[in-house]
Amino acid sequence: ESCGQCTPCREGTGWLWRMVDRIQEGQGRPEDLDKLDNVAENIMGRTICALGDAAAMPVRAMIKHFRPEFAAKIDAAQKLTS
Figure 1 (cartoon, rainbow, N blue to C red):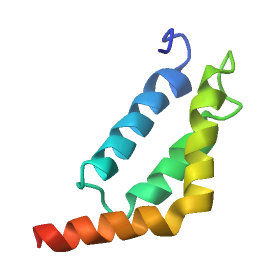
Figure 2 (figure 1 turned 60 degrees about the vertical axis):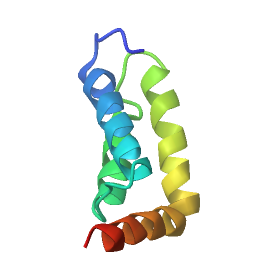
Figure 3 (figure 1 turned 135 degrees about the vertical axis):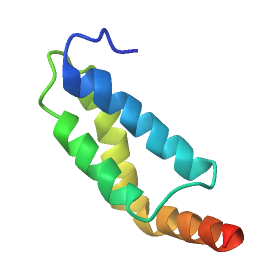
Figure 4 (figure 1 turned 90 degrees about the horizontal axis):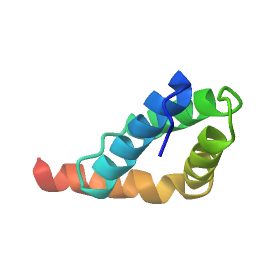
């Protein structure tokens, strides 16, 4: 939980959570992966404490190492709703 003192952590961690949750719930969009990486990149090194970095690092690692799997999940979910 963010203390709310710095904007990148206060706003960014919420964005990360909502986008990852949306993907997990089958409502992800193809552009979400790039947005996730961008938001996480903009959190890292821009917060007062290490909480922002600790939230952003696993998201960036997830995208770096498992991007095809997340893209496949998004694609499969979109085909089901089309």
